[in-house]
Image 1 (cartoon, rainbow, N blue to C red):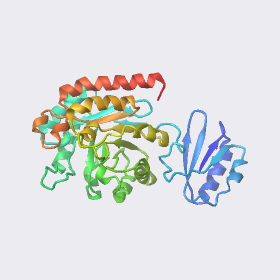
Image 2: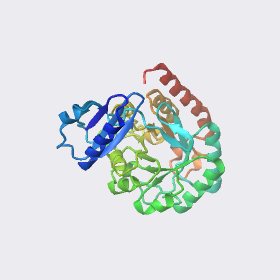
Image 3: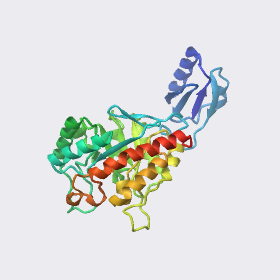
Image 4: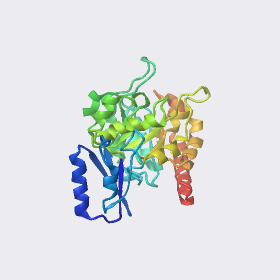
Length: 338
């Protein structure tokens, strides 16, 4: 249920309303905009008398929310959520790029890539320490050593770092990681999502291989319902019958998620396409579709990469692509269509 208040509500009346709602074991999410205040009621609202609230002097309207996701619902939070990557805002009209190798391999590799992507304008450095692979015989990442090297690159470059968690037991290793990524395979690992809801840092949540938009948002809801409202939604391609690309990039999910939710939406064109030559065009298309950012794989020597080298850009290509993508995003937003 949402309660929209009239402009500049009386503070005493508002506090009395909040106290009454909380006395009914409801959580109240308050969203303040320039010309409005919205109260989002979370919990069992079946016993709430809508007409009783509607007649209050400070109340403009009362509506019940039909969608199962509440906290990430745009009706609860009409303004776009903005999440900081270090000191760079993501969302709300601010476009950012996260870039780096699929996996952290060596000190020299991650330091070189970090310096290159920062010079090209990336807002954050990505790098896998724990790698979920389809084959148990494939490179699984450097694990703790990978995080240590990633944090070393953070110190050298000044870029905040993004890396993927695989299991709740690994959480203590992520204390200095700036953004924790949840991969597609873990999108519905609900115990992990609940644990990340208690973490006070942004969570980058990737869409599952065959998940609907509602299932995707319900996973975000698990994190938010447990206290962490900093969630970044990431489309990384879904599984279809097509064999010419690794996955199928569903760009239509961008306006769909923007309509349903206030959370920032980014695109992973590397995993979506699986081929480096397809990444630039899909990156530009993502910006044109209204995405808030990208997460792109960049490797200093893709042909020798231990993981996903075929879909990784080299630093020179990324340096040419980054300003073009940002220009497209700016032009689209200036045009007023998105």
